[in-house]
Image (cartoon, rainbow, N blue to C red; front, side, top):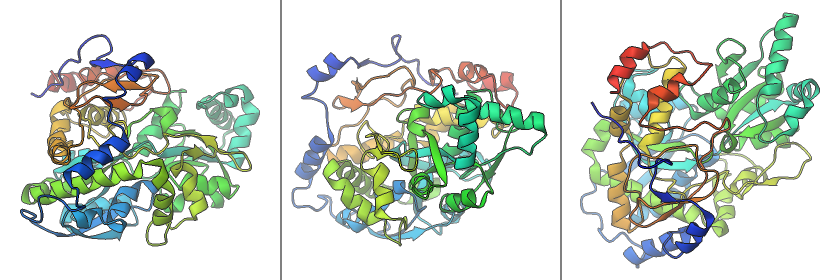
Length: 476
């Protein structure tokens, strides 16, 4: 059975992560500007050097959900990156993640903007018919937040003002509100997330459980599509939610909600969305798939140039895409974040990361983390080999082929530990050293993908439905 290789030395990665080391290797680190230069060197005339030879399916229909992190697909279409790689792409705005999943499954979409957990869940048959699905490209890091109604925020402030002063805000005050409601015999609070196997579901649960809240017993947790979150908060149907932008900023600017914590605060620099296709489609269209990924790598590098972000905002805020005011969309996309109405936006340069920090590489170690959360919350009920599943779904080989053709630096390892780095560091296991960002968890835990069973056993709040001995045997 597949097993994650043990990670070397005490930090579980061969890196130099002190500030002095970063400065010393600065000339070798591939920043976004250097990557763009490398890409231009490969294609000096602005057209892909390989031409159209080998493209099995040049006309493509790709799906997306109206969130700011659909931007790589939208910008690739609007700025001609797809066309440069001999692809004629039509974008399809979808109403829900279930639509995305089902349309990719039946072939109505060639590929789509997906939650990082979706290809894993589809391949395991969680929540739907089992369909092998793969990703060779991570679209972004971070980008979500947890927002509550003004009324709930005021209750939390009243019941535990000290906890609410500390950043990042924990769920400690929320736990006290929930306990008070139970004592008074009140109905449980209702929170929403966007999909059962969404990053948002696992982030919301992780945040709550770290304060002792059982999200399956202590609250009511429901699914609402991202664009409908604000209206449901305003109507009082829900008291809080976890969603991507711009739907947190929309509630804040409307004066009906307060954002408590971002998913960057919960786990620094985790994969948020991926570009997913069915395994069948990937097998039938390998050259088309790589052309798509080449176009998306170039797009993501262009988007991460600070001088290009306002153009990205203007493009994606259009009605055909996110359909939100540019002033709302730009809040997070230009390196700031507003937690409360009438309060100044705070600097948050890594709220949206589209290329730097090896953001487009589909780390198999992060896939294993998502699988542990599926097991933790009872979504995986039968033994599964985490490493083998990650290897089948997160196709680092496809990404490397595309990046190599562009001359873009890429990691030479598939696995890394998470949670131990509070400062920027350098990934030495790469074709060129790559500057990386912090990777801390809110609760100070660390994650070693070679020891998923130890990680699972360490949680006090969980809803395991799987025999742990059988799971351990499957992961020997």
